[in-house]
Every structure is written in C-alpha cells, then in structure tokens.
Length: 435
RNA sequence: GGAGGGAUGACAGAGCGGCCGAAUGUACCGGUCUUGAAAACCGGCGUGGGCUUGCCCACCGUGGGUUCAAAUCCCACUCCCUCCGCCA
Image 1: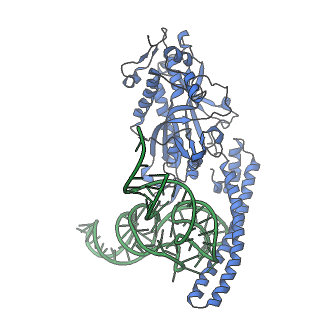
Image 2: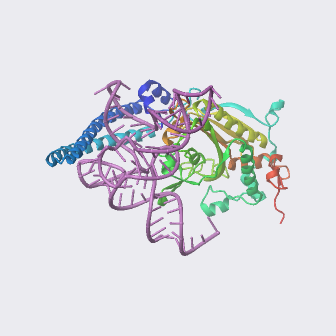
C-alpha cells in the first residue's frame, strides 16, 4: 500500500510517478477527495463521541452523588447523542473502507531508475553471462544434440513424466521420476547450503490466511492467480515470499536486529489463469514448482545492499551451474504491483531455444511493510516501517529444464556439472535405464 | 472430535460495568549519590489517527451485540494450555 500521507503532501510527485505505470490521475484525485471526506466525517463522529463520553462520565458522578434525577436526565441526553454518533460513525466507516479499498488497488511507486515501458518487450537488458565470458570467449552456440526440448529428454531418460502428472492433477502439474527427482532435490540442497552462511532457513506452511496474502499485495489484486481452499479460508502460497514477509507481521523490531535475512524452499502454486496454451509445454509454465527464496527485512539504508546481495547470490548459483543467463531491469509496464524495482534473471535453454525467467529480485520499499505493519525502532526511539526485499535463488523447474538441455551429450545422456556431485550421490550423469 | 482453562503494555501480572490507556514488579532511558560501577532514591517510559499543538479519538486475541457508559456483561470465531479420543 502506498503512503496516503505522501499522496496528500506530494500529490504531483505521486501522480507523475504512478502515471508511468498507467495509473490515471483521476484515480488518485478520487482517493484524495475520499480522504478529505473521510477526515471531515471522522471529526464529526469523534467530537460526538467525546461528548457522549463526557456525559457518561457525569452520569456516573451524579449516581455516586445519589442524584438520580440528574443522572437520568444526563443519560437521556447521552443516549440521543449516542444515536447521532452511531450514524456518524457508520458514515465514516463506509467512506473509510472505500478509501482503503481504493488505496489497496494502487501499485507501488516505481524507483526513478526503472525504465519506461509498456510490457516485457521494453525491459532493459543490463548484462549477460556465459561460461568463459570472462576469458573473452563468445556466447556459446549449441550443438545439435543440445537442441532437444527437455520434455523429450525427460521421456527419453524416464526422468520427467508430464502425462502422469496430468492424470493425477491435470495439465501443467509435472511429475518427476528417478534421477529427475534426485536432480530436483540436489538443486534445493545445493542452493540452501550456499545461503546458509547469512540466511536463516525457514520451512513455512504451504498455505496462508487471507490476511497474510494481503500483506504481500497478492490479494486483493491477484486472487484469480491463486489456488484457494475456501472451506478453510486458506490460499496455496504462490511463493515463499508470502509467509516470510508475514513472519514479523504487526511487530516492532529492534534496529540492531536488522537486516533479518531468511531463506526457504517451498512448493509454489500458481493457477496461471489466462495463460492457457501459451508457453505451457513441459516445464515452461507449471502450476506447482519448487523454489528457494531469499528474503530480508531491513532499514531503508540497508535496502540497496540487501537487494544486491540477493541478486549476486542468484547469479552466483547460475554461474556455478554453468548456465548462460541475462539480467533484465523490468520496465514500468512489467513491474509487479508491490515492487518499486525488480531485476529478473533469465536463463538460456537451448532445447526450447528461449530465455526462461528463473529469478525475480525485488525491492518493495515500505509498500509491503505498511500492509503487514512491520516496523523497527530507530536509535532515536521513534518507529519506522521496514523495507522488504526478496528474490528467487532459484526457481527449479525451469533450471531443471535448462540444465538437462544444456548438458545433454551427443550420446543422449545428461552430464551434470560437478557442483551437484555432492548432492547426486555417485551419479552425475543421467542415462536411460537399461531394462 | 469431546471436556475444561486461558488470551491485558517489551516481559510477568492485577483489574471483572463509570474515577482504567490500564495497578504493581522487571526491563529500558534520564538524573541524584559514587573515583567508577552496583545498590538506593527521584523522574520518564505503548501504538496509531484527527485537527484549531493543545486537546480529542481508537486500540486490553478478532468480529458482532447489550448499555447513558465495556478490558470488565452476552454471542460467534481464532489461537494457546490441560485431559480424553483418533492419527502420520
């Protein structure tokens, strides 16, 4: 949620900033009018309530003084005022919830360095990396045997079985088998081990309350993109960002504890409503995938460093895995609702011949913290909202795809990079079962 | 799933219709004393909102209700504890 006080104080700046994201000025003008109306009603209601309270106090006084007649008279007046107060409060609340509702629909103010743009085509590529780049080698071209899609490799080697997944849960729910599962497991262990030096590992629930979803900004806006368990009022988490952001909801943290860094691997559930038929083969887009998330609560001053650390860790993993990737600064048109700045990592997957998004590293400023009410006590003793940053490191389904395509050998086996050896047992080469 | 108990400030814990935004203790901050520290003593010490900056309003798990007046009474829900049942 954006800061209403800031909107009041610097309406032109907020309007100009949000216009870059396509929020019309009129929407913000409506909010400003609602705010004025709300405060006017609030004053009325509150002064009425103050009178009721004062009269009630006097009733008590009169009763103690054994002056029943006076007490009755005061009580009667108070009751009349109370009726008016009730009406005034209802009007105030009605406008107040309308105001809040509208405010919740407003996206975050983009950072000044976020480039202008309409959609993902306008994202700006910051850099590219591939094995040997530092030594001046050109970006790799891929052999014919690497030009095989991972779903074909998966069937060939018996490590990915999309048909069985579809049979059990419908399309876009992958089912991994044998060495394919082991690879998935290896990737999670590998990443969590790399982050363990600075990030506390968390295993959160896979479901969250509506309130929790509100904190990150996933609700009310993205309700259609998530799985709901209506009977119990729960939502399947689309990312570990959801529970991690709410870990300290409603708390005031000591500044000395910041930054608080956490990591978690969870299943991530996404309905991908409206995406049917688009890039949906194999693991390109699935309803359930595993992902290691990095997260930090920090002060505004620490935010840049925290953001950079997550990005560096995600890139570090990709480099260790020897995958070609590019770094994109998202433009205003592609930025998520809650984000002030997002940098995406896309890995090149030769078999499908495309760049796949495997990480999204975002700085939310105090947008999520305002909703989640996570604050810290400054050295001066005042309280301030924390900043939140997070990023994937990494989303495994697509990494899995890029790995098996990149490392497919001429003989059809997949020879995985050595960094995974400690997690793959003796087998770093995946070959078809000879049965 | 059944029975009972509970949820109050950073923590512990009182209050159980009006004088309660809330006793008391601890912690924390400032001061006196001291060479310094400790102890003792004195003072301060929740969060948010509104405006005429001095006042007003809200908050005692959450949401409703009763009342002139609710932390306090009633209802529902959530969570925690104890016991029973079931169970990976």
